[in-house]
Length: 170
Image 1 (cartoon, rainbow, N blue to C red):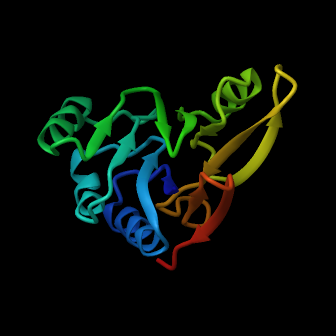
Image 2 (image 1 turned 135 degrees about the vertical axis):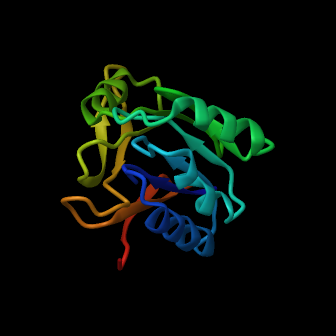
């Protein structure tokens, strides 16, 4: 299963929708948004691409009530998890948090095969040694909005556990 991983869209609907559209064309079947989405209207163009979306709110909360309403009205397409998400996609245990230092801490536990985070606006995908003697993937897609950094998102292949940074031309 391929997934689109985005973060830090900061109320910029167009680049978010562009990333989801590109990911879908590359075979993505779901979207993970690692926070700082902000407005409920921001997600609508991305939802129009037809992929299920898992989103958390991040440190720029925006209108959480409107996000919950948008989730209820989406017939299950938008899953708004609040401050963090614990999900399973493609048979993989995944946790989604906003802060990158929290992501690192979750990766170190060994409880999750994939930890997705945001906040730093710096795209990276790396394996982190965990306390169980193995490794967990820590993936930060950067900022899809291109704020103080290139506009980036990640395409993840959960079967192969490969992650590729993609840059948007805004």
